[in-house]
Image (cartoon, rainbow, N blue to C red):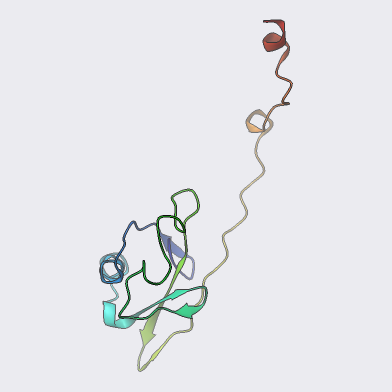
Length: 109
């Protein structure tokens, strides 16, 4: 998942250049105006995402890895800023997990 401020997008890519090209298509920021980060550490331009530690084992659909994104502003890059996700609302009672004992109908069978 690529995150920039409150913007985030799911990308299924293995190579850094393809990631930057996809970001360019979505956010209109050319690759030379982008910096990608992992855990607040700048990623090496010469390495693929796999070489930076993003693999199918560390970045799964159900538990995506985060790639931070910062853009150039004038002669310097903006600071990396990722807004936290908002908390989801509480589940309605009908969607909450039921007791493990099962319902009365299931127990009668």
